Length: 348
Ligand code: TXA
Ligand code: MG
Image (tube, rainbow, N blue to C red; front, side, top):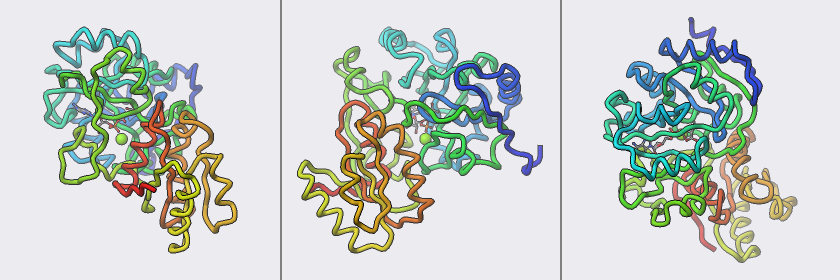
């Protein structure tokens, strides 16, 4: 296949994908190629998890540093034993409660997982996605699929196939396009290699829900100090970033927060404002691009990455984002915004 023929885009039904499309994508995975596919969180960039050279293609396509490990996707619980070893009972309990779903577990890796996939670590991140297209692809491929989010390194994760094409069009073999993903932010990552269990990334399964099963799970929120140890390998601050600079505003006094935001608006030429629909109206008369994230954390999660990309298309130089409540999916939204801002947080 020459570069100009790439990628082959196949539109598929989100609940009942055509077997012919899935079979073709699965053949590509088995042949060592790259397939972008939807999950319930974001689109993934998939390759055969057991094949080192296929995994290497993911890192090259994304421009991803070799020290940032990938997530392995499995079709069913039986496959877990092929990717992980010494799986603790807690992992099975979590899998029964949350799989298929937006929970990634970090476990000890099996010998079959190549070292480049885990960035040389003795642990592996694994999840069973809750999306009919992902499930069909995994079943047809008959092997686990390594898949990070299908964006260029440090760009916002893709929630529609167009985002994948924006970033990676000439680098992948097949794109399975099933429309917008349901959750919109990536999976929650929980390490069971650490004792007690440690939340490495808030995501599609809330920390509150996890805590019902793992009451002693710990979460050390992202540190703003670039020099400090990273909370998860590869989860460096400059991540999920639009091209524009982002400043995050936190505070309960809405009037004071808006005043602080207006100070920035006055000092810049093209500014974007990202906030809830309820607060968006307050900026109607300002000369800004306003994007409302809807009402509530679920809607905010679903719209977040599209909004960040839309600001880039609108050519804003600065994005002023209102920090969400850190509850439920709000914690994941807050985490992504803090990363997008590279730690630029204003507490009013
Ligand atoms: O929702 C998701 O998780 C999406 C979809 C495609 O499944 N995938 C995704 O993958 O977000 P990615 O590559 O963007 O994030 C993988 C992250 C790494 O950056 C790292 O922080 C963590 O998972 N990770 C992977 N392996 C790890 C390990 N062995 N130990 C600790 N963290 C690990
Ligand atoms: Mg990613």
